[in-house]
Amino acid sequence: MAENNGKMSREEAGQKGGEQTSKEHGKEFYQDIGEKGGEQTSENHDQEFYKDIGQKGGEQTSENHDKEFYQDIGEKGGENSNGGNNS
Image 1 (cartoon, rainbow, N blue to C red):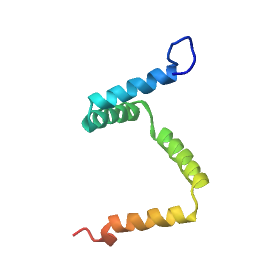
Image 2: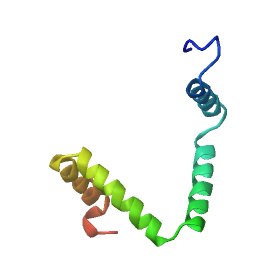
Image 3: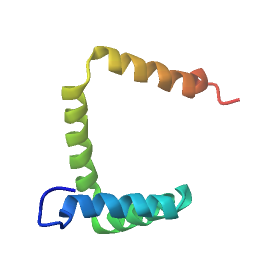
Image 4: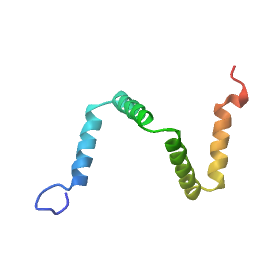
């Protein structure tokens, strides 16, 4: 605990709460709240919003990864698509 007259910082309290929530709830809980959040986001934002965040995410990814990263994910994508054969 940080020195703050014996009180927890907001960050520490959040961490502690998150850890407790994680102990009390399973994977399904997080899937449910993620789905609800996604539904709310799609109701409150238009196509332009998704275009903008996709663009920003792509720029960040390209700044943080090299050519090898893209080769690896391309290879994995090819393996998962079953080479175009869905049988």
